[in-house]
Length: 296
Image (cartoon, rainbow, N blue to C red; front, side, top):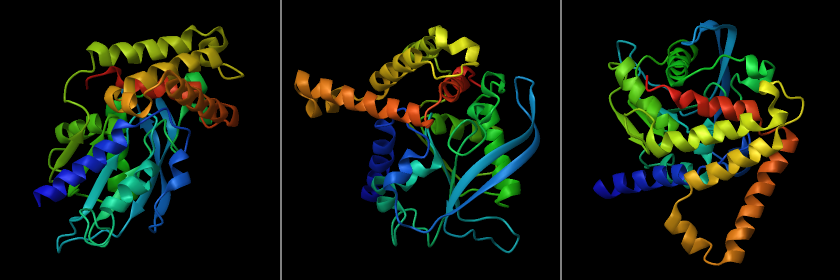
């Protein structure tokens, strides 16, 4: 059993450590073939912590398996898995995650567990600034994201209890907030790649530099741009690559100047093709990182 849990952690951490600025739904290009169900839950007149209200907030979700309930109607087998900044629920359908956990006899066997993979506010197919409001979208924070997760589970999926919450990176911070805000709503949390402390120090510094880099581009126009602020996005992607890359594996994988340069060129080329196609948006990116400003 210890070996199984060690493998579980290794798989989860591996999907977190390689996170990059991802085009929307990019994970779908290499996903598990397991049967999924997708849907949207719309929250009416949602009040954000900063004070704004939106008449509708759409939360997209993907599920695997089926919910089970005890005699009292309490959900007994639901597992909520929360993605990181710029990610989506679909990233957990990638083979390196799903093929190690969701299969028969595996730790999160979908014949036993009901897996819920949300797209958070500002991410994936959920409501986000690029849907139309751009820089006039509410400056949501982690607490707002957790409230919408809870609303979708309780009212959209009729899930009233969680067997486990797994969160990676931003989702890790969300899992701590779940434990504080809804302490009786889950049996356990597995918080990966974060600590339950204010985001400060180097972590805050590179986030601030990323956001400042976007806003410093004259093409930003206060967030009301008509074409993407390319120079600002380049700064943001440069910082994100360094901040999320692991130095030792990168040294081993790209051990020459030529190999390192080629990787950067390929990385940036893929991201800017995504910008040109509309799959990466500067407002969405800025808002996603700004959400980490509160320690809640």
